[in-house]
Every structure is written in C-alpha cells, then in structure tokens.
Length: 51
Image (cartoon, rainbow, N blue to C red; front, side, top):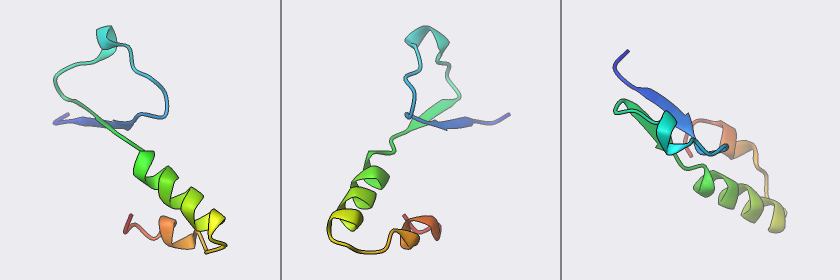
C-alpha cells in the first residue's frame, strides 16, 4: 500500500495516525452543499467528481 486516504468525517486519534495516512477535509464539500441548498440550487453537481 502506497498511501491510505480518508476523510475527516470522524476524528482519528494521533496515536492511530501513521506516515502513509492522508486525511482530507470535507469542509469545502459541506460548504458547497449548504450554499447550494440555501440558494435553492441543485446539489447534483457535487456528485459529478468535479468538486
């Protein structure tokens, strides 16, 4: 395994982290979803892979 990539939807204790672990923030995705809903826009574009 070259790298393990996870999101920060759940906290990962520092003692469980390792060198090849990459934790990605989902904050930008959540912000776009909230903005889309607030502005009465579609959230479908969030699932097209171009986030």
